[in-house]
Image (cartoon, rainbow, N blue to C red; front, side, top):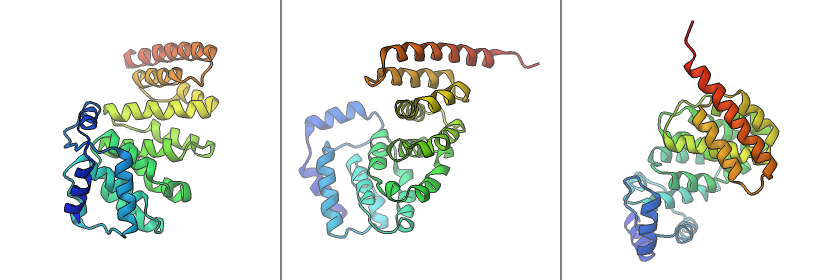
Length: 241
């Protein structure tokens, strides 16, 4: 079956898209150059044919195999107790933002079973692997952009210890989207959080990049960013008495 998958992916190879993808995904990944719609079509075909996961399924030779595997998990309609082990087994193989973000977007079971899935993803906010932490953050963006989960997500973000670039960018991305949807609780969090000045600045920058934010609000946000950053830097450089 795995040889068949590679053959099917190879038929959809686009050399121009491969070069484009290599510029975006700088990690050491073999990239065939297959567009996401074609990978989704193949995943749906395999799902209809009742594709079964085996140990061999996790011997990935290229980026597209990982993307396909993630889509196949997302298509599972079995009870969440049977899907969670598949997610858990796949997470260590997430090695770039593309696989992480695509995988999170397709995990619709989080919308069907929000609370059990939240309990499942919560430990990943404190994971050792950077992309496992990003997985939790992007799941929050994709499926928990709800006022009921707002404070719960902020509490988890405040405890993140990972300093990897893709984790920091995911934090800023998450908070910027939360601000657009729930401005008051998000700005209150930013004013009292434990985040670094770098992440606060990046969050405000992402918010101000949005066309949904009024010009006067952007001025206010930039002022808040400067004040918060100055205060945080003062705290970091204050001598311990």
